[in-house]
Image (tube, rainbow, N blue to C red; front, side, top):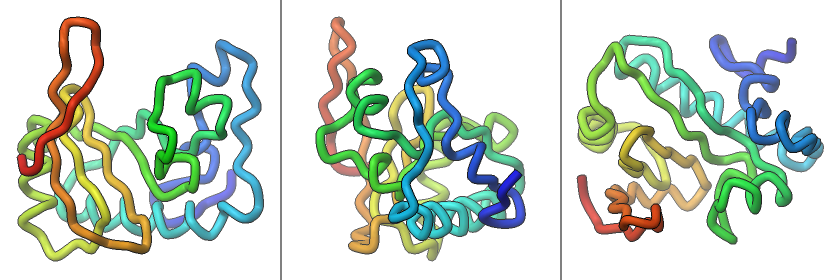
Length: 146
């Protein structure tokens, strides 16, 4: 196992049930490895802030996997800067988003995605907070704030 930080491994951030079920190779290329380390360190800060382990749903996504899950064309997941996670021991997704937003953690985006929290540590570090709203077909639109 390749540890990127104290609590997060490369394998955890590459893991995808969709990739496994569709036989997609989701191995991160070398040029993304530094980004995944930035992501892991950012996730460490979130874990410390919340006081509980995070359950990572999605980290790095290759282009094929990103298309398979319907990810954004310019997803930070493909660059290795984003993860989707839950932390049920802390509270609701909205509780997580509000706590991260109120902290001094340097992040690019944190989004309440309904059943998970998306966070990215893209170097722009814009501290954008958003909430996803899903229509009957599952298509998301986003509003600013939590």
